[in-house]
Length: 308
Image (cartoon, rainbow, N blue to C red; front, side, top):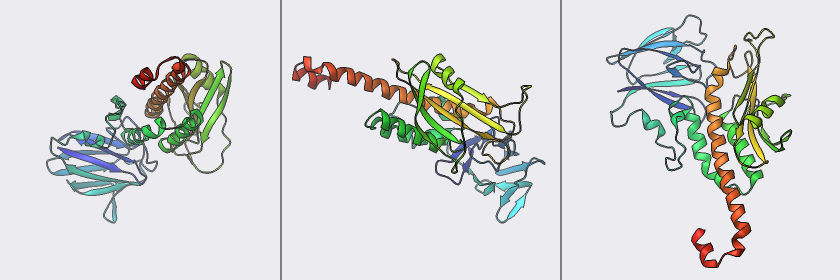
């Protein structure tokens, strides 16, 4: 079986696809492509089409793209390669290889902690390279000493996997209409004045599901440049609630493409919701531990040893 591997310039930016024989496939930055490379802003939303036939790999850029295919020291708009050749588009290196059937496309999951119980359908989406980062951070999240440290670890993890955002934040709420920012990080260096959309936080906490907003015109039409944000709740019992808030820009001089839609943020939301589920499990277990520590004085040492 022929596979195509994409490798970005930063750690964790790697993904692999199985390439069927004779099928025309699309390559680009947006999720609707057969081979999506979401980390590389120098690759167009829909950049090229390619096809594998026998031992050859034919790729052609669409006329509107800026960055052509680099092979060796030359740039090409259309190219025929042999399996095993390496080429580059933008900042991303591509390699076509032949794998034995017993290796399979799931080799990209080999480094994940399969005992952690967090592998979901999202592991097979274009967020694979970021899910690996999240899965490797699970032990440090569980070992965080208290809620403050857990929030800090979560914010740092969001900074790593949402490196196209302006701000990532962990928000805490003790009352229905009162909340504050527990921890925040800035993935893109440099100061930017960022406003948190209160309605997103309110809706996420009240409805228990992700609330999202992408800026558009007063007529509801897509914009070339604007801002986006979404807020995902960390579901736990009680009044002390958390949510994860992420916001950024799209269009000119920003990491995200122009005319962004809510659908373009779906992979980001899936990833953040996965992290929210992890944090929810950790916080629930800690609450049970706290309850037990309050009543352990009423049990004999033998019982304490059994349950601990």
